[in-house]
Amino acid sequence: MMSASTQADWTGAFSPLAFTDVLKRVAKEQSSGELQIVSGNWIKTIVVDKGAVRAASSNMRQDRLGESMLSHDFISSNDFKAASERMANDGCRFGEALVQMGRLNPKQLQRELAVQVQRIVLSLFRVSEGLYRFEASEGTPEKATFSLPVPPLVLKGLRRIDDGRLLLGALPPTDTRVRVSATPAFPVDRTRLASFERALLDKAEDGATVGDLVRNANVPRRTALRSCYGLLTLGILEIETEAAPVEAPPATTKEPARETIESRYEQLDALAEEDLLGVQCDASEQDLKAAYKRLSAEWSGIREQTHETELLEKIDAIEFRFAAAYHQLLVERDRTTEELGANPDPTAADPARDARVEQLVRDAKLHLQVEDCNGALSLLHELVALEPSNPYFQVMLGQAMVLHPTLDKSAEEHFLQAVELSPEDAEVRVTLGRYYQSMKQNARATAEFSRALDIDPEHEEAKRYLDATGKPTGVKGLFSKLFG
Image (cartoon, rainbow, N blue to C red):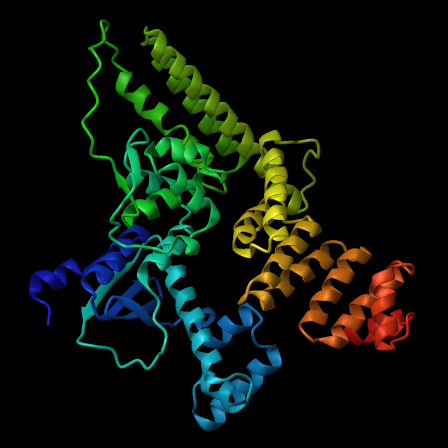
């Protein structure tokens, strides 16, 4: 039993960073017990045993095992309905019902339980407030055969944090030098890291500043910030403790705004556009203009008080960054409005964003060519987030998921999205047909190859498939009736 002082340490206000600290403490002290988080009307509980996560529960419908399995297409809606009916009739659990039905074996059930537990844990990194309480115990009654180590969960969870200012406040100053630790507090197999995190560690082998790591990462600043914080908080990166640099001689002219200028200048590469302007992610055009106008007036006043050439140059860089952030957010807002059907100016463009898209396509293709699905997935998720209405990017993401040993069933969502975006593209239909063929869903494969042939009667692969299976090649009406 914990002492009163220890109990107090394990109760407090919840935030993603507080959650990170609690998980680290659980792992470090090899604790067993239950961590309960309450926010609003929901309650989530995480069961840990000897420093690892063994189970999790939630009173939210979307966190249940059945909904979790449906969300990544491991079971069909018919499976869900049949298992639910068996639960009601026999009083068994959902997973037990699926095993009794022969829909999955006990090993598959344990894997799906692990997926459900991980989903619940990771969802908490997007919760901004609440209360937590950890109650220790000698052991857990859970019978799960899986065990989820804390360090990979922390890294995955921190990638989900949206609040850049929260992470920036937790990180050391951007001019702090860090390097890869020879004895990390929480060792993590590098092969389990995202490709950009491995590249970040490569850059830090001989030491680098936080600002350099963020600036040179081939991912958005917010993504790099998350990873830097995660690697530092797990002790994989450590702050260099070499001799302090020689102090610069005092300035001959007193500059009242020096600290303000230096502080903001150091943050330029680390802050996301919203954080730089001090606006919410869904800020209106009016809010953006007001924020930009306010900052312009504020820094115009600071410029009038400044005389040193070096500081004036930094003010130039700060004001340029404000302007770039303002225009980028306007473009993103217009793009969002266009997706919602508001018909904004179609000529708006973002060269930096377009260049990033081209780079992601090139890099993802290289990873796919060597069947490095993990490396491709992190790039393609970012690509689809940047260009969600491009059917070919959805196809690329689906292809990468097919290569992954556990995500192949989730690939269908992206192939279907590609078809929805470009229903008259025969090649997209054939790609979906290939997927169904690989999953041994022959009726669906035939339907897609037939639709492709209706669109392009000369499509060789579609003709070959239908000839090989003995299916007629002109059945558009039949399959439209059967499959919608």
